[in-house]
Structures are given as C-alpha cells and as structure tokens.
Length: 242
Image (cartoon, rainbow, N blue to C red):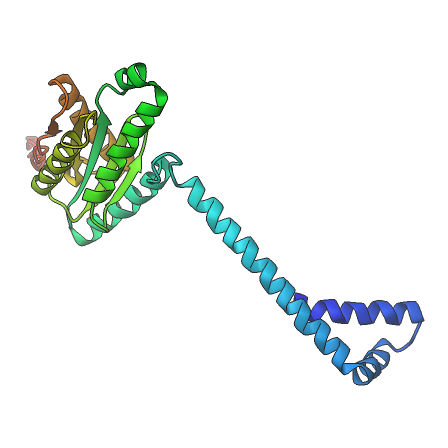
C-alpha cells in the first residue's frame, strides 16, 4: 500500500499544484503519458520499503535475542528461562510427561576472583557454561540466572535421569582444565510444582542447591518426592433426634 501510495500521492500533489480538475481525469492522463516513469516509481518504492522493513525486522530480532541472552556466556538469561519453564510446565501437565530443573552454582567464585582477578572469574564461568551447553540435549534449555549460578531445564526427564545428568555435568566441570572450578547442583522435578508456577519449581531446585552447598559443595542434591495428599473423607453428620 505504501509503495502504491507514494506515486499516487505525487500525482495528487502535482494535480493540486496545477489546479487541475477533475483530479481523476488528470491523473489517468498523466499515467498514460508517462507510464514508464510511474512504473519505475512504483517498483523502486516497493524495493525501498521492502528493504527498510527487512532491516527493521532483522534489528528487532537481534534486539529480542540480545534481551534473552547472557552476554558473557552466550547462554539464555533468567528472562528466557522463565518463559521456557512456564511453557514446559504447561506442556508436561497436558501430556503427563516428566520435567526437571537443575540449578548449578560455581563453588567459591569469589575466591577465584580474588586470586586471579575478574578475568579469571569470567573464564571459569565460560568453562562451566561450555560444559553445560555441551552436556545438554537440544531439547534442554540452559541459562545463566545469576552471577555464579546457572540453570538447566530438562523436559521429558525423570528425577533419576536428572541426577545422572547433573552428575555428568559436575564431573565434567571438575575434570576440566587445570584451575577449573567445582560446581554444586540442586534439582527438582514437576512433582514439586502442583500449582504449575515456574517460581515454585525454581524455589524447590534452590532448596536442593542449598543442601549441596551446606554438605560441602561439589555434589548433587535432590529433594525427595512430595508425599501424596490423602483424600479427604466427608464426615458423617449426626442424626438429630426429633
């Protein structure tokens, strides 16, 4: 519409300046006499607007990607993780599939910064991020959610499989290059979020992470499965004698 509107607008402006009436007759005559020129205007305007729209769309996509990406590690950020948790919780509830969340904390990152400066700390974070990304499946969502904390959301993953996945990450990080940090990992699964609230799953994994750190770090902890709530039996009313 804009591509067609620009040449037509030019014709209308010319008609107004020439004080020619009626406009439509003058416009049609002008188009017949200079068809090639106005065809060129239409095509060139279409090309300009198409290119302009493509550039705007590309920049919008790039800005959206930047808003969801951690600049240091290239993983997703907390905002992206929250979106994914909400979607995966709804999908898991709909299809009755398992879902696990791992919270991964870099042990004693402050000590690494104190010994080698922030560059050493950044390098440690990048190594952990690379290990998580390398270990994760394509369907998993890895993110950096804090200064020294990462998360891995694992759809279709039971609690037992999540423990095995967490151990692979922990061992891979600790067996890395000389000076690689250790990590503490806490995990929870969909059974800990009866309300399907993303924050509930995150809090459950955070409690498990606290157990790992309190137990000496460089280990994996998970919360026990919640006990099923017994059904409430309706109480029998007493008969009132008349």
